[in-house]
Image 1 (cartoon, one colour):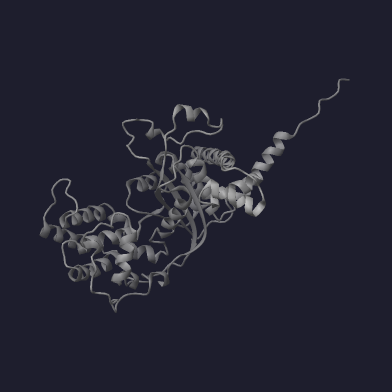
Image 2: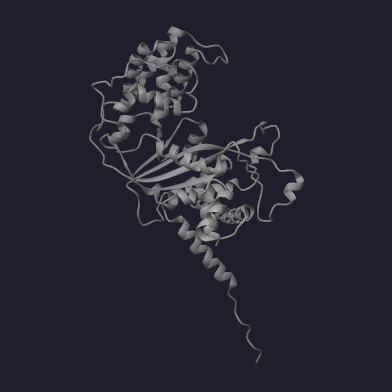
Length: 418
């Protein structure tokens, strides 16, 4: 019964929909509140298991952490991370008294400080994706030319609209008349030579702080034997929190800035303050330099453009020179993580698009303008991550839980006195 409740609660978009599904499919008359209590109870158990495993992992010596507890070590191990949003509603004291004994409020340590709390219901959760992959290494770059996907103005405008931070009404999103794909372009990105193939994925998600998330992600990678892989990649966008986790727990992985995010900053700088056609011609060259890993040449072009426009005033936003300055600072700070030609030669992934897709799947259940979590967000994130994982984690959990119940119910008859 618990297993059915957990599956329906993590799969449906709400506990009410989950209750209706169980009634229609299994004639189980459960109220949404009952579904909520049962799912949170199991989710709390998964949270406790994850935390205990992370604590054990941190007690290992560094050489032991780099070994693999699993028999199979992936040919290519890829760890990606990102963040999503959900809404948190603070409970009144009277409502808090009505909580079940095993349910704890979803308040992270940094939110206990009133000065640090913002006047908004939106909070951030952290998610990590672990991908075992297979690929071949190459003597030279197997795809030296920028894929045609990124040299098609219509497709680029679609990508720009989807990436957060690049959706304002600025020259970045203006329509260009240059719709033809460059003859020197490479194949479509999905078809490019040397692209790694994903085998098995697993997810980790929590609404706790980055300090709690890092050990959870590192332990999950250790559990799958990722730390012992010969080729390892950590792919993320330029957020400082991502690279703080990489520096502390994954510094022995090749750090790679998501190519799509880097390309958006190049696109924004090229189009800023120029006509669409003129901007596109600069973007075409700059994007190829980025793809080739010719970062010094790219940064020199951006510095030249900055000299033409001038340095923006403090807190200046929305102007061409502010956009060029933002792009230049972003790419300069990430310059050591953009050697994409070398990454392709090693058969490593260069985009975090699988992570972006996973965030959308998590958001389907956890995020919504009408959804407010007072308690249960963290347990539900663990259950959703379990459901989206392909590592048989759900089966293993229920087997362990059943065995614990059997062990706790067992007893030994007292010996009769002689």
